[in-house]
Image (cartoon, rainbow, N blue to C red; front, top):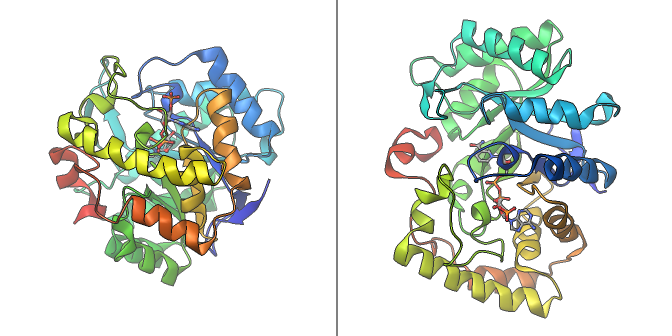
Length: 331
Ligand SMILES: NC(=O)c1ccc[n+]([C@@H]2O[C@H](COP(=O)([O-])OP(=O)(O)OC[C@H]3O[C@@H](n4cnc5c(N)ncnc54)[C@H](OP(=O)(O)O)[C@@H]3O)[C@@H](O)[C@H]2O)c1
């Protein structure tokens, strides 16, 4: 497995990380045994970065990861954990809490659920608009000093927030959506991250399955699947976006690769500071995703991919209007 450094301040991790969210939440039902088998297959293939959030399934995802890591060498895995989202008993989102006391409280529960003394990368999943980022990051920095956290990360933060946070404590990586379909970070956020030596863990590299090559208009979505509400999966937007996937498929087939593989390979090709997180929750999807590491894209291939999906070609925003309005990265 090829490895990459998470920026100048973070750990070395596998060039592709496994995002475990869909194994517990937001993408409809998942099979527990297959989820654990997928984590095992990832570790056996050399994946060292596992991404989770304490609010994915309200603790379910951390407990699942703990079970998957039983009997494995904890030191060989980089656990990246998000905190801050508040959930109700039905899974609804109630807001965000990133006050210092909340950070310490969330971390205490996370350590217990994961069965570990320290989290490798700890980050607020979203900024708390009522708490200056300096306070949130300052508290995580205290946890670093106490030995409970190794590195500090951010998620969906804009350039200015990134600079402010980095002035308090070095930021290892910014986790943010980035794909052929979502290139918004290229204007300001990516240059700011690069200037600070902050790595990017890119999520949504398959646009939540939309450009995974296996999506169709006929795919029925379970209750609780967030894609029921994401603009890119609706009506005419979906038609237009799936037409882009067909254009990608042509390029992929000419390379002897799949759509998912060229989409992941494109993100990998954007720089050594990019580590795509893939949301595989089945071994077949994982194996396909890791195959992206074998796809060598030439400058001509990259030009063809960007012609198939021109910048801003996506129909619909990446989140619904309410989320878009509160995302620090979209300000
Ligand atoms: N910081 C944040 O705000 C944030 C937000 C969202 C996610 N994340 C992190 O990013 C991780 C990845 O999530 P994502 O939404 O970005 O996932 P993604 O990889 O863009 O999409 C996952 C979806 O793609 C489908 N897919 C098709 N081919 C695939 C393949 N070869 N490999 C993997 N998936 C394939 C999956 O299919 P099936 O459903 O058929 O399995 C699944 O529905 C999450 O687990 C989470 O850790 C972070």
